[in-house]
Length: 114
Image (cartoon, rainbow, N blue to C red):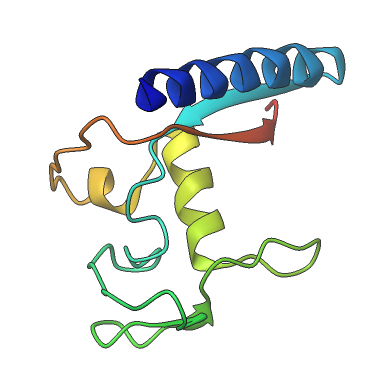
């Protein structure tokens, strides 16, 4: 029961967000947020980390970036992954790797229209 309530809440939130974004001349795209903090936005490899670790340090490509930060002049690993998923240009898709996205909660990211 709580899962269906949660899903309905997200659906209503996305509906409201879409209307508000449209009124502001923006576009809203729902993306799957699964592993956005753990997938490397630079090389696409998964880098597992505990919640208390706030920096993304990829041992595969060497990038060091904040894990989640999204501020005016600084963007974190998760924000980059969400933007790339919304734009349809994720590192994983570009490299031809296919992943099961499951039915995780949806997260919305508003991007400027091109």
